[in-house]
Image (cartoon, helix red, strand yellow):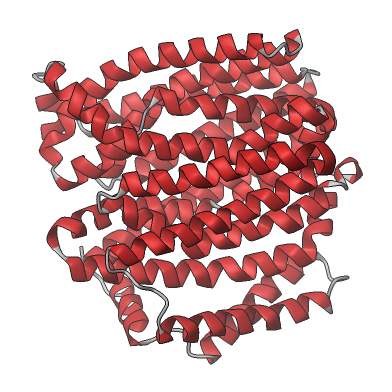
Length: 485
């Protein structure tokens, strides 16, 4: 199987799984928000954001390091599997202790503290699940990870429906996350045992013992990835924590109704990054030309998808919010219209972050995300007290833009200049096609969304095709995808 076909296969598997997962997540989020109301949904959203910040300490970047190193040398898999497992036992114990200590010092009500405890427990089990996922990803067996993600989402959705039927409160809903994480861990362990039982990985793993000399350099290499994850967690979660502390649960509920929709839309760059990460890691060692090619195409295709999503969501935000969450969440509309442009920036610039991490520039990337996180926190502290969740929405989008600009500057240092004549040509075509699509949406507002969204997408892609967005290289890639091995 060619590299293009392998990337396509892994991306397709992840995309299908991510779409299924996010459809399931969409429904459990909708049911949960409608059932609990803005205040209780705000408690749950706060707990997710609060524990999300501490999740980093249960991993310290070991997951991405494992993917990168094992993708380059499969024989390292047993050593990473055994030793990282032992490291994580220590890390999750410390992480849960930090969560419990911090939430009690903050003086939140008993119900909120209990919800945080439950979400913290789910982190403990998920930490080991992610360890197995890193092995699956390094071996480019994305289907196992994909099934696990769908299973977790399906369990939560089923649990939410059960909770609604029997009148569970927010604590009962939070317990569903723990149950789902335990079952997902059992699944990943079973896959490792059943599907890799005859492989070198499983056979050698039995003979590998923990190696203290391996721990220190491994943690040292992983820490930049851990810092990236920590800064990203602060970046994406601290605004929710601040809103909860300063403005209360209902405001958190309004903000997170929009924010959860935005996070759902990130499934495409997330799936693409997961699929391309091990491949680009190998290209960094074997072929600089292939690395550049994969990077440039990643940038082009993600930009093609991100910009029309931003235009369409901005124009249809009110209809989306009222349909999904109901009139109680009407204040979420403006937040969604602002936050959606952080998604656009992530689509356009997300491949640069992947490039930096696969070329051993993870510390540079960590510093960039750290700067963005610092700016985000400072601006939120200044403006949230007066402008509430509107300020949080603007600041989130602004700091994503700052991060993207800094990443681009860093990419220039390793010889990857994207801003060329070719860039302006294809970017202009995307913008023009998106404007044409937007005009159609604006004049068809009364059409049912079931028809409007597919027709808008069709108009966009037809326009892109007419404008000759796809060049000879793109056509060659498509042919490779169609042709058999």
